[in-house]
Image (cartoon, rainbow, N blue to C red; front, side):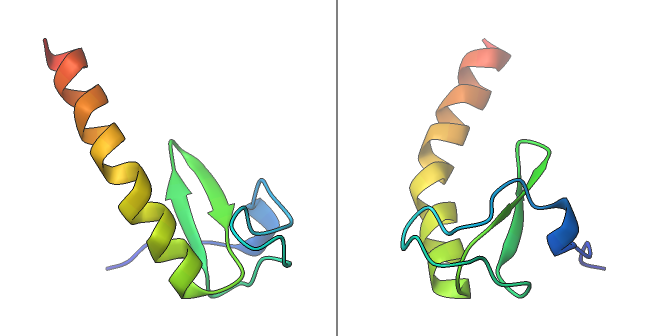
Length: 63
């Protein structure tokens, strides 16, 4: 079951890619916080951009 995210918990009001207001259907959880985007495409672009860094950090922590 997918986690339900609420726009009220979002830490930002504008999309970091476009500068447009965040949309309730375009939220994700990142590093424990709810982050919003203007549309699902921007959300997915963020996930693709951060994934390699998150993997590298996880490997470094595992040592």
